[in-house]
Length: 489
Image (cartoon, rainbow, N blue to C red; front, side):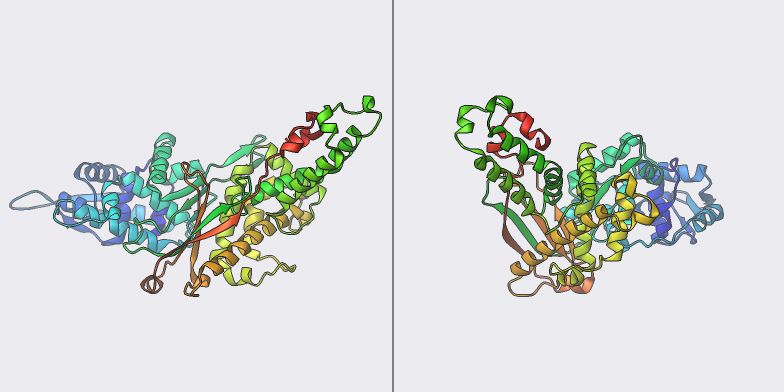
């Protein structure tokens, strides 16, 4: 397979034509010609007759493929077809320094599609669910998935790939692209995604995030799962937990850092004479006394802190978090942070395991990723080069994901009661809750990509109960006049 095809920018080259070229690059190779009947070529590349014919004709019109008839005494005409030297030169001119980390998954997927399509007429052959799905995939869907895999980092995370980039790399319109992305989500190949966001005329922005489920049967005939850990929130009155809500807790703490002392003053003032000069309270609230409401505020702060590492937020960092929330950037930032947790567990298991809460130097590759992706979210006064690397905002984000990764580690170690799972060599994916779930549990999939590890697997499912907290404004504080707690609403 020639991975340069998956980075070839041409918005006018259709996905069907691209898919044909990709299969050609796998067998026999772009530099090798083919002499055969057209129908044999379509079958060889796993394409239906009509789509294969349209793709071949398109490549011929563009001069990408050169087709010459070969004399045949009988039967359908035979063609001698080869990839033009001009197109091969354009491929060679591409910047291909980026490594395709998930190349084995692309190869396995392509082989599965071609094999499933080749067996279309063999009705007696029993097909797996994955093979049935492969048969039904259109070339456009196949090509989009191959492009996402080519730009993904283990364990299947795609970032810094905008909608325009995808349109250029797939030859699809915006509407067609969104339709194909929706297809991949329905199939479960895209486990979760969050669209990129731009605010203030593009000055504040983050790229989209796609998380591919590499345990999906489309990628491998054998289930690569070693452990499926079901993290079910238990106890408490809220829905929030340390996996899904650590950033929400940080945002709440930022609001408390900024406004808590002022709210305390307003509560004390409301209960201090003369009542006529303070905020008016109902008699039933006055009867409870100010300590009741102050304790509720302190408990609210503790609920947020229970999902966070021990940390002190500076005013600047608190302002940055509040601004991210006010701009509506929280969902896309949370998607990025979740992807960093997966990367920490996948690539830095041992380093995370050595973190016992003591200060240490951040893992350089993770910190640089945070700085690159989240640069525009930091306070403007902290974006100059001298302060950039020491910005408390990036340090906070790093500490949040490290804390979450470490808590996940501890839970996974406890679930692996027989000490059989080779965590340091595993990949990790945090699956989102399904919309119909009453209890929003999370599934952490521990899987292995290498053939040797696959042969050693014995899949296990485990359940881990985790505390849940309530980050909504407590009933006691809701009962107070809105002018007291407006900053927390």
